[in-house]
Image 1 (cartoon, rainbow, N blue to C red):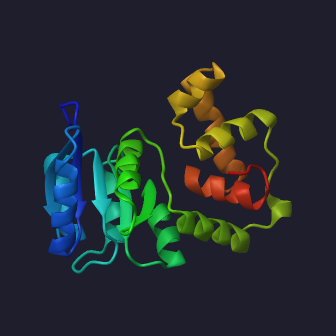
Image 2 (tube, rainbow, N blue to C red; image 1 turned 30 degrees about the vertical axis):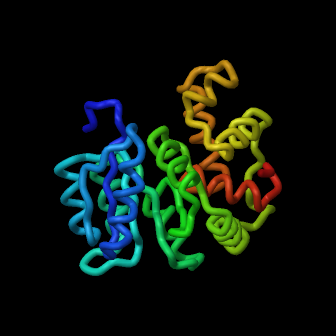
Length: 216
């Protein structure tokens, strides 16, 4: 893994122009280091084995192995690697499938440069950043899949923690904010996911928004 203080990045996109643009952008930041680039998911997986980057910028629609398959494969093999889904296709199903596969964030390629660099920093810290359209897609998914009457109520402490999760705070940051131990936060987050029948923190936030448990 990364032995420097820099954020090691891997770019994955089947379009060379996009890869070049991202390379130029990343080179502007001293805290970032590009460790490789791939034109499909299979290459991305192999480069992750070789370099084990901190963050991967992953296109979703590619030949040989698509981004969704690659996200799942990489996260299963290297759970510490954070993956930002970065695509130009505004399809709700892509959002849902990317988050289910293990992406920490979902952004569109027309994202502002400041937003992208913030998302990379957040991913490195274990925090999620979502395009507004992506959040809407997850809320819609929750609407179609969850009956509000079947959602188990959260305790006041769980609601408090979930609100901080929605702000993108990590477990240690939540622990510091609430003056409790990280293990206690982990326990509460585990219960929150179980009660909301969610697989990920982002999905839990979407279900909570749908059921008016929190507001963002």
